[in-house]
Image 1 (cartoon, rainbow, N blue to C red):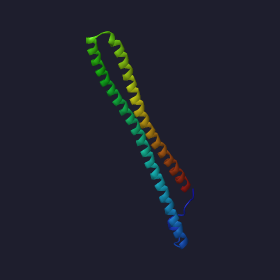
Image 2: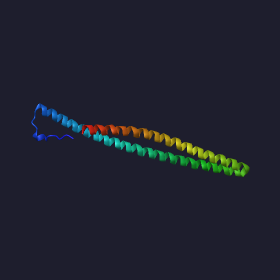
Image 3: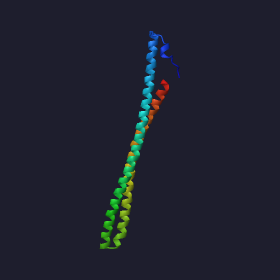
Image 4: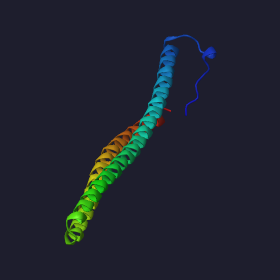
Length: 140
């Protein structure tokens, strides 16, 4: 890091005016770089939090849909029990398989989409962070 001459020791000439200009420009650039860094880190953490919240919401939605499906299945099963017994086993097997498949597919798709988007943004902001870090280091 370069050491700067205190302002009170400077004689005002063309050279020192240029020096003052570069000194303040340097200060402004470093401060700007650091603030951009902070903002990027902030956005990065918000996006990561949002990704996990969205994934949790997707999981909760899937869970609620599953409960509704199970209630419908139970109602249909009770109705079938009243009509005939042999059909129950086949129907229970089919409904359990479909319930598991729909839950798994819904959850996997929503979570994957969420995490792909979040990862893309996270990588983008990490690149920005690295760029601003490098620039701040160069200017310091």
